[in-house]
Image (cartoon, rainbow, N blue to C red; front, side):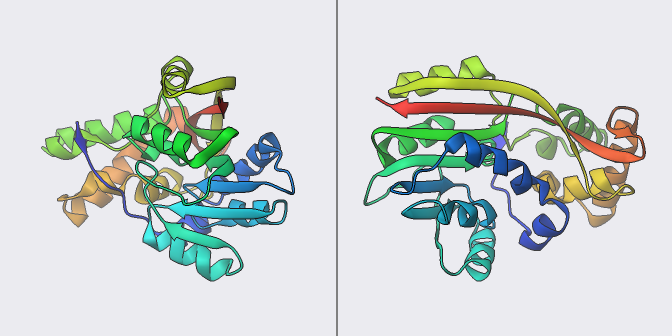
Length: 256
């Protein structure tokens, strides 16, 4: 599959997809930050969770590959340090006690490089507390989208490699190979309610699947998005509400 880079609409993210960081609040509880710690929020998006952590620790930094997201984070939370950086190859001057990452690492298809970068950024005994898309995440939506693209002759777009959705076995094995000790791992099914009861799936595709439409005509984009929503309705429209078929993986590991 062809690898691509996704571009972000920070306003649409905040307006209709705030569930991304709302769900992340429970991950902060798992992180259990201490007042004397230095925490790195990797893939911080528009910075809401970074800001929440900032009130609990000595120092927090937010990193994200998207300049649009970092600009939004800096505007909303000027007291917090945010920088543009790629999770696959970032470097830090001073080691961190913990790395926190919510709903970000499935966007890093160079996952082994990301694991190595996280390992290097931690002090000895430091921990990662991460949650992201696990095996079969949004399978219903992505299968329908690829099928609609193929049908119209957009074969290259249908084959793009946008995400990394591993099983627990896959990911924890890679962590152990890199030198981490895995202390907790969980895969779970989390159907996620979307904001708009009329255009929920169309909005989701606009936010998270726009990279599939590189070279696709505007007319076809509208048609495909509506077609996908119609296709998945039997599975993902329940009691008058749209749901995305999210499967999540949570992992806590320590640098030995």
